[in-house]
Length: 198
Image 1 (tube, rainbow, N blue to C red):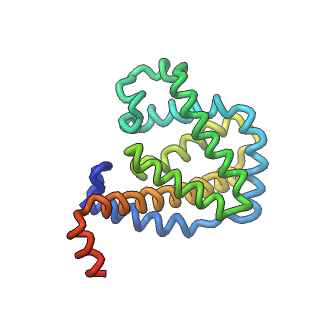
Image 2 (spheres, one colour):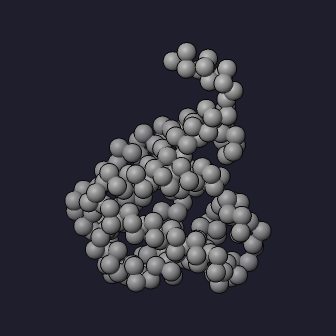
Image 3 (tube, rainbow, N blue to C red):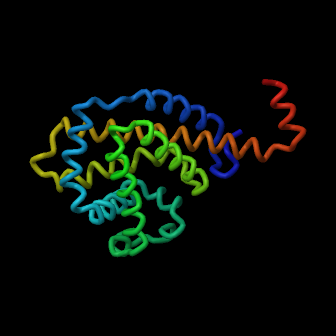
C-alpha cells in the first residue's frame, strides 16, 4: 500500500525506490564541483529572478505541480504569479537551498544530511518525489540566459548531475519519512507482529 498522505500507489513507490538507488549512486567530479561553484557566482546575483522564472516555468510546463502548493492551487494567471510575493518568497527559499547545496559540495556528508531532511519535510508538505526533477530542469532553463556565453554542455551536465544527486537523496528522505509515519500509524499489536516477522 502507498503512503496514506501522498496517495502514492505501491507500484509507483517501488519505481521511485529503484530510481533513488540509481540516482544516489551519482557522483560529482572535482571538475563538475568547480564548474558549479564558478557558475553559481554569476547566478547568485539574480537569485530572486531565477526563483520566480523557475516556478513560473514549472507551472507552465507542469500545471499539475500547482496542486502541491496550497497558495497557488487555483491561480490560472501566470502573470499574477510572476508578481506574487508568496511565489517570490518560495523561490528564494528554493534558491537558498541550492546555494547551501553548492556551498556543501566539498562536504558531502553535510549536503546529504541537508537533502535527506528536505525530503522528509516534503513528505509532510505532501510533495511527492515525482516533482523533484522538474525543479532542476526548470532551474537549468532559467539560468541559461543569465550565464549567456558561459553556458556550455559541461556546465549543463554538472548542474544536471548535482540535481540528480540532491533529488535522489530527497527521494530517499521522503521514503524514509513515509515508512516511519506508516509504522507509527500501526497499532501496537501490528507493530509487534511486524517486528517479530523481521
